[in-house]
Structures are given as C-alpha cells and as structure tokens.
Length: 427
Image 1 (tube, rainbow, N blue to C red):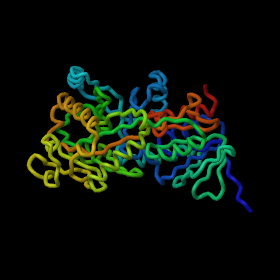
Image 2 (tube, helix red, strand yellow):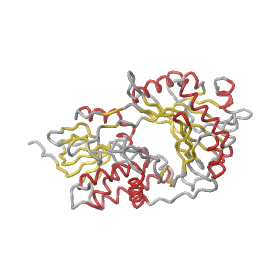
Image 3 (cartoon, rainbow, N blue to C red):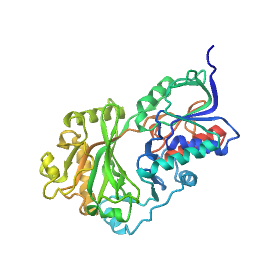
Image 4 (cartoon, rainbow, N blue to C red):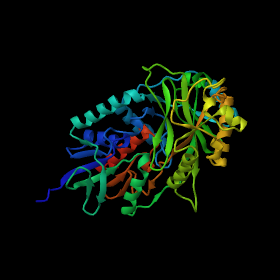
C-alpha cells in the first residue's frame, strides 16, 4: 500500500536567515498553521553560521528597488527583537569621513553587531529551539528534490511520499543559484541573472588598517562600482568556499572572547552588470573562477602587495622574509600573479580604489599585505515577483540573497517576514 502524503499549511525550504525570518513570523503570528522547515544541510548555514555579522542601517543589505528606507527601518526593528544584537559602539571616525569626502568616497555610518563564528552555532540552535517550541517542525539534512506545482507538493530526500503544501517558501542562499534557476524555469517564471560582484580579499596587519579600532566593519563606497565588504578583525582568518566549479575566498572572525591574532581581512568588490550577449552572472563567475583555478593548481591565488607593485609574481619564499612578517591564514592558497587571472578593467578599478583607501587609512597597502583572488558573489537570481511579498506563483514565494531580495543577514530575515505576512494576508 502506497504511503499517504504528508500535508502542511506552509513548507519553508532553507534554514538560513530568510527561512528563519519567515518561520519566526509565522509561528508567532499565525493561528495554528502546520509549518515545516527543511534544509539539505545538517546545520543551518549561510551568514548566520559563518561569522554572523549583522547590519542594522539602510541601505546596507537592502536592494533599493524593493525596499524603501522607511519600510526597511520598520522591519529591522522586528529583526532585532529576534536576534537580540549587541551593537558595536563606533569610535571617532570623523577624520576618515573627511578624508574620504575629499576623494569622492563615502564612508557609511552603520549600526552593527558581530557574533563570531565560534558563537554562531549556539545562536542558531537557540533560534531553532524557539520555533520548535512554538510548533514548527524542523527537519535538517533533507533536500528538496523536485516541485510538482499543479499538485502542490514536493519530493524530499529521505521521504517515501511527497509532502503537500498550501504555501511554499523557497529561501536559497547564494550557493543555490543553479537549483533556484531550475525551479523558476519549471514554473515558467522570468528571472534575471545579470549582476555579479568580483574582487579580491586583503589580509593585513591590524596596525596597518587602524580604522577597525573605531569601526568594526567599515563600509567604503568608491567610484566605479567598488566597495569594501565583510571586514574581519580580532581573531580573523581567510577561508575558501567551494562552489560547483571553483573556489572563492571569504573572511571569518571569532568572537571577542578569542585571543586576537593581530590581523584584519576584508574584500574589495566591483559590481558588474552584464548585457547582451553575456547576460548570466553565474556563467561569468564560473569562467573567472575556473581561470583562476587553472592558474593556481585548483586553489585560490595569493600575492603580496610588494610583489604586485613591482610587477612580480609572488613565490612561497616571499611569505616569510624581511617585510613579509606574517603568514597567510589561508594555508591552501597558491602564491602567484593575480594580473594573469583577473580581468584588467576590474583589477584597474579595484587598484585605483585601494590607492584611495590607502590615502584615507594610510598603511593598508604595506608591502606585506596579501591579496587573495577570487572573491566572487553571485546572488542576483531576481525573479519577476507578482506582489510585494515576493510571490512568484500563487502560494510560492522566493526570498533571501539567492533570490535578490537581500544582501545580508538582517535584510534576508526581513524578506522572510514580508513573505510570511503575505501568507497571513497582510497588505
């Protein structure tokens, strides 16, 4: 006898901040609806798991065409009631602001909180317990395999029978761009994938980037579409992240309870908007990522600023001698020449911005500073939404960084709340 399908009022796919934001709002505001939260990972991943840096000031993380300042501010207040942030107290940043203004650079003033990679998992477990105590069924290590929209059901790994739903919320992270594209194509939902961020991650002595003493994650906006992103200091390290066809680098830092290692890292990203004939940010990212892997033996590449300025490739020996007085925290990177792998226009704009940054915060371009490549962000699978709650078909919502409704933890959580409001009938 065939096993009978299980039915839920709402199924949420993805346990990152977007999925959790939806689950929190539904279980706290709904009238006893049955809710299932699934994720193919055994531990909730994404920004909450990795470093867990939170920004509480518009427009950081909020696409301006989807969020107004007034609306985002209201939702950020709701996000804060769930995440209970301990805000970083900024110091005197006015000297940096004035120097930036003289160069046509903007230093944003952001309300921030930082948890740290080592404290992220306890936070996530507490969030999951909160929704489970309120009736949400949480099932990790289960992957959504297919969607049968006419019958309103999905197939899930580890389940013999399909799971039926009234409403479905898809909350993919950036790494799920291929999967979410398949879903949107199956639903015949138009989408755009023409934006990608390409850049490098710098690692330096904290003393050569002293602004982090006053501002944990400085947000500099430069001309030509370049910006700083995801600064880590204290007990900071660079990591590699595996994508389908290549490795990208990223930065983490542990909580203030860990012993500082005296290093800082951050990304310099340039936003690329593609047009015909190459209109896929995903495909462009794969091309760049694979080129870098070919030149560095399948690993991310690293180069000292001193070598870069002299037009020389870095070698293993240049990471230990003379001025090069600290070892890279990403042990698996290959010394090389970034100019061979990175498109000249992108590198030129990033280097120009770095020289501006070195004028604003003198010291960051010390010869010992390490440039890691590639750091690539592909999170703009923007579907055509049918309403302000990010619905793409009746009863189907797509939210989070993977859908282009957000760029970060707090905005992703806010987009989850908006989708949940749509299910509950809010205007």
